[in-house]
Length: 105
Image (cartoon, rainbow, N blue to C red):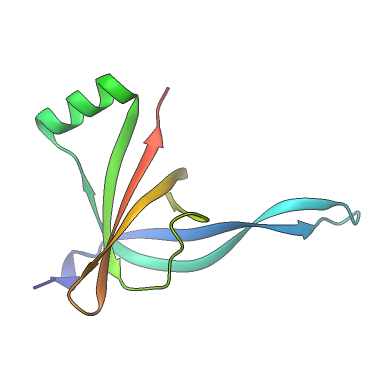
């Protein structure tokens, strides 16, 4: 059972698309697909330290309402940082957990 009262963080699911700037040149533009309320879950203790020391990346999980997400093209913006989506885990019928990572070195 998911407690939606714990959805106290906000994330943006963003995709890079080809667009045109003011001068008419082609450039990549961030397009916000969804803005969601979610529950932020980070690794704690032994898992965090072993993962951070070996691979130089931080893994985070976001529990939120289900939306259509392409894990190869989309990424998550949380606290001004870009997290790559590694896995989308469906939970129950209406929710999903986004497994993400960010390089720190």
